Image (cartoon, rainbow, N blue to C red; front, side):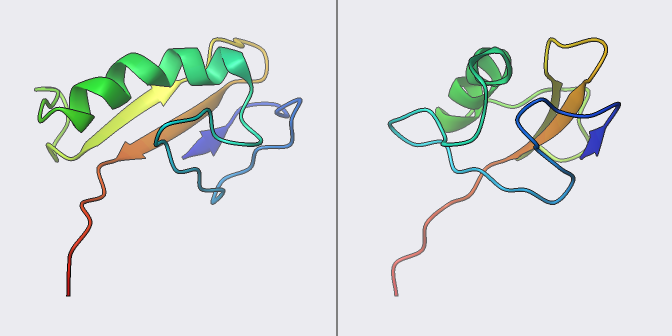
Length: 80
């Protein structure tokens, strides 16, 4: 979503990660641990009342100097 400063791992606006059964490659543990609670809420049907879209959440990493704000988006698989 946005980067304030420079992410030490090089994450940039437009990068995408998929959260499934493992930690996404290229995402630091600090950011992942910040995202995990919201990701679990969304994985099990929950949402956040302050978000306009129930399938989206915005979460910031804990680095206050080089903060990355992530947009979590629920992706549902469709069988064809």
